Length: 325
Image (tube, rainbow, N blue to C red; front, side, top):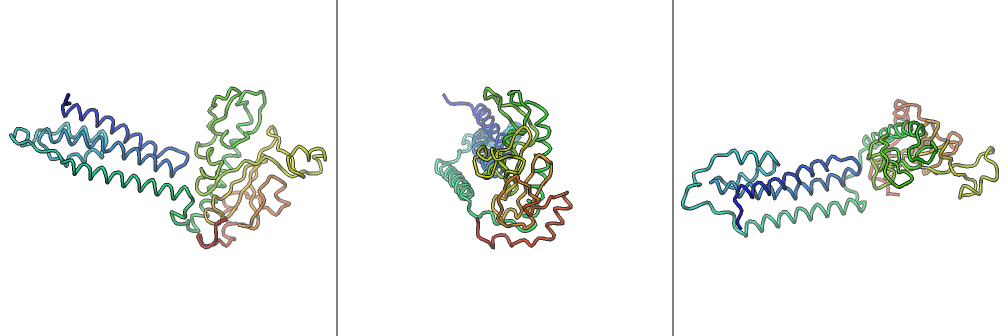
């Protein structure tokens, strides 16, 4: 059974418009920004030919030029425009306008496939850590450091609020064990519990592949033994001279550049005291831990102005001039 052009328009334009809108929404989701953008554009690209197909068929049926199919790029607005057109002069003609040939359609399909493969290739190169796009400029590196500092402040505030409530229902009020738990925790039955003390993208940035603005935020679980800890604590830490943090009283998070000297020069560490620390020697290889940072030559960053002052006293390498570590 051959469907009427208006029916074809309704089906294809509706399906295509939904895909286009979902694609646009996906582009602006929080989380892994680059991948979300790629997936969103791909979904939009899949929906566009559907809209274009229905609009083209309808335009030809009412005697309008097939160029009206380009309104399919406008999503639902394209379908609305085409249905408001009056019939063209060829609508009543004995020689109706011929639709595009199969050859033209196959060429268009081949072009779409080539573009899609190009996107997939670009995504593959990016995911493999290829140096593309080009390394950040020094100004971008400094901006990344400032953003990392602000996000650590947000995490510190979120941890203080997290500890005021028993989110997972285990009868204990503790700090979040993982950064992502400040966005969404899990109860004793394995069900998600919305926390929303930090954005979703920051929660996922606890691992390197999901870094935001050149930094990822690693939870720390041990600190060096002090004289007050007692010798019997050494065996509990899993490493000689270290002990596990007590989540009821302690937490630690480090902000680490995704690519040292390329996306950021400084490492930052925050803990339950609310202080944020960075090594005095920016860019030096350091052991990231929560352990009396002042005695290890670390500087407490008092404010954003203080961080900018430290940046002004630091010589930054030209991005791309040093080997990746």
